[in-house]
Image (tube, rainbow, N blue to C red):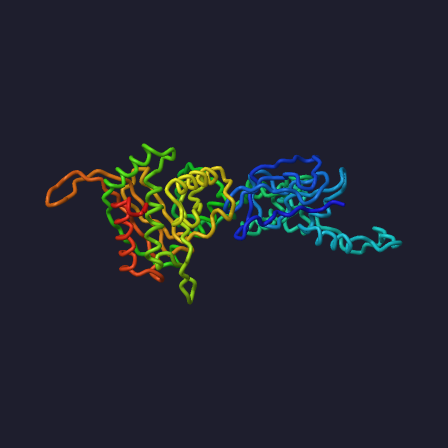
Length: 430
């Protein structure tokens, strides 16, 4: 018996999914546990294994297309089996119920057409698209549930859409590519027309529309929620990096692991968070949650935006271990292979744009954290030491704070501790 395979919810925040790749084609045999497709969620691209077996009779979401969770992803059944009735309601349960209602009772004969006393249908409107076989407003238009929803959102009359799916069924791409037919405008009265100013023809604007990935949608939503719900304020401090540069050079000369300045910032931040628990906190409505664990998230740039893998228990890890974890998780993030649990549990976040030559910047807090640290690049500039102007290597750090949790003095004290740790790096290695 044919069964619907619904688009699964692969993360706790997933609302839509995009099929990145199908591993089975129409007509292929599918065994339980076979890799059916790769699905892009709001966090990563994940493998989806079939929980059913049978022949792949129908694909409901093509590669690159997006659909809501629980949409019809595919239909599995016996080879050659009729499955079309399953698509009427978008689910097996609804289809079975509809089929039961429409089927004549056992032994009952259908009424002859001659006895049908309903009025004859009116001739088709000449404006209807002859290629669709569906008149505007026809309740029996064949369209996928996703296509119906998109058409309703965009105000598109399905009767004007030509379906390219099986049997003329309207699918998502038909809605995306639909262009309304131009209707002849009614002639305006001559008197009114003569008074109206001549309309200028709009200039053609060249542009390209790019589909928004599930990851980008989630990033946009979460950052907007953070920016407009958490009252941000910003504190910036300059750090003298001579001793940090010298310490890094000595470590890399004797160690197989080549640490980066970002590793030093992560380690120093974890050390400072232990001394300032208010920074390692979260707003929880009528309470403030003071986190006992120190889990530092490190922002990683990917094609769709930023992913934040989390280094758990950062304060208990050395520079080499931090370096290894950051590299491994950054690679997985760029390959869209990070597991959801590797992006959860952060209590503080670091965003570093120093390698791009950025002097300083402000970052949006990564909820549920109360603070995020923006790290600029190391730059050479004149500094005053012991009353003399000498060359210096300076790095700017900017702390974005949620004022509901952190006050200015609290944030400033944390930055002073962090500055001291980076300017005297051997102390935090003890």
